[in-house]
Length: 571
Image (tube, rainbow, N blue to C red; front, side):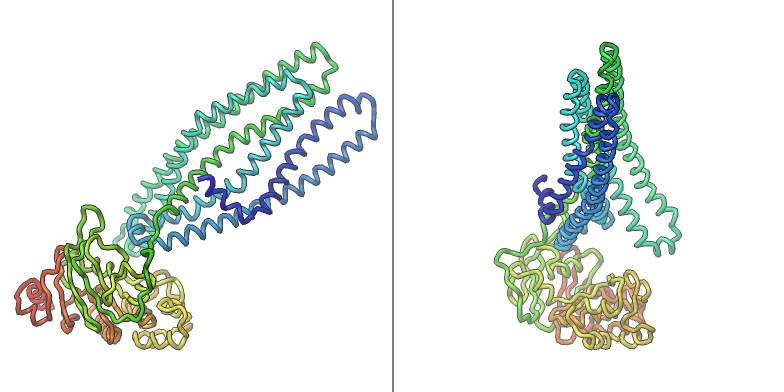
């Protein structure tokens, strides 16, 4: 863990070394004041050496100007080093997240992932910047100040040193408790972020059902949990700080009394005693700083553990000998495929089907039967447990996921659009396309005319998730995206089921145009839209129960015929 943490310092070695040198020099400068104070009290003032007094004062001023410059460097460049480390960590984390399998996002809330990218990384960087700096400055200050105190008075120095083991003991006893408390506090903060992200994303549903109070109640649960975990964290922190402060205060009293007896026995030690009292904080403060550094260390260490937890999540990887899938014709075959999202949750059982090049193959059946799962398995969003899936006779596990997905276009019921322009959303289909190709794709999807009625045309921002568009416009935009991609294989997963009948007819025209010359797998709710499919399969309880053309399935008088009769009556 430590080795991985230190690896982020490597690109910033020069700044890091300069930062440490500056910090070391600042800690060394701190000893000048008590040294000069001692000399003034013991020699210059009693002997009225005015020139030496002025020289010492001037020297102190120069030294403090130097410390000001060093402090500026440490605060500015040191923090910038931390920011750059944060940038690298954030980039590493985001790049890794982009490579994680879909199953990771099925099991982790967006808000909790966002917490890892924001507050966790901030605490890590605070540790990265202040950690080495604190350790170096405090360690140096402790050693130099204690050596100086020994030179003044050995018995008083040993009394002062005796407080250190007690402080360390208190720290070791309370540290674990404080670490666990702050970890739970961070987890509670992630719960709040997850609830916030969910509530804001679903604000229209909340308002439509007038359930604001319910959302406030749900948010309050996480908020209360955060407060309770914060209470425990700060309680342990309070115990830690109050205990260490009390120990140092007690030893200050002991030193005051011991020093008083020293002066009673020999008044000539007044200068030494004064310098010792002035120098006590040079020793005690860095000791306390080092011990209290455990707070930021716990925050940063906990954040880094959570950061590494995601980095160690296995990414979606191809087989070692995977090759690119090229010159795709579009023949798709399932051979005895079995799959389940969990160990005891089998969604598909021994499914076999074949879709020939250029065919339209439709999947129908009751909800939860496994239709969408079949669609997800073809682009290898999930890996089958048993059996195999072939494209043009090649097992999809033996090809790279990038090359496989480049040859598959997907239009889903739940369209996801980015908060950017029409042009940028269509370009997502093929980033290197020209503007003319974007316009052509929009025309084929029957959305070009609408875009041209807008003041900014293709540069119009559509809002988060396309909130400024109607359902039909969103679907046309997603279809334009696939037109631009121009894949040989097309998957339509209930692409029109959320639309009204009039809009569905218009969208269906765009889809019919999109399907021409492509192997198409269609998941349909309305059977009228797939009546002319080359083959239709009825999927129920994870199995293909019936398969054939529309007329063949009607003549079987089975599940498909029953579904058709029900819809015919409804229509």
